[in-house]
Image (spheres, rainbow, N blue to C red):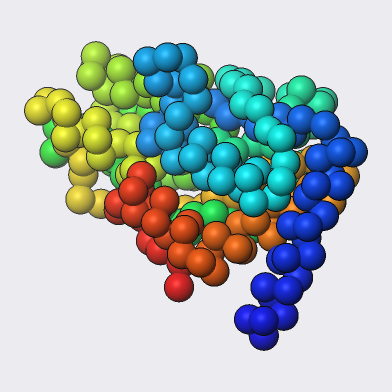
Length: 242
């Protein structure tokens, strides 16, 4: 079975060169504001786990790729309208999103979401919880008895906790853990929640060939261990693929 999977992957990757000729440059859309998944470095360039992952996927698929940034709240509409060809921005696979766009093979397993607060006695079931709008965390908070306070960017959610506007923020643990380590006034709550179905590359539903090409590249990285190596480097608390 593994030989069959690898053979299929090789065929799909071989098709990458022809796909690049047909599409020209593949535009990789990301937010650039959600470290360690994606962020802008001191040179103003996209950096992080997904930049390194995306560059490797494009190399394996023989695709010429360029990176563009887009605000989170319009990242799906602008993919659908053709402003770029992929979303590689820490986007969890959900049934609701799959009604609008297609997803590649998952390149991370589901990551725990954590609460960040200034007060360990915060009642997370009835308090005011900040989350970035349009995320699985915002949907989760909305389904509980807590009051949801939504913001356009992840930095704004943390600022809301620091200035007392919110009691806590809910986001991916990989995003919040470094913030808690760097600020003595902030701490992670022991309680974690598992939501979402792992992260994949978002694409237009009509781009079936592009999806097959990225699926094959992701599978090849899973098979040779390089994907787990990147996860260990950038997301040390995340699960690894077997």
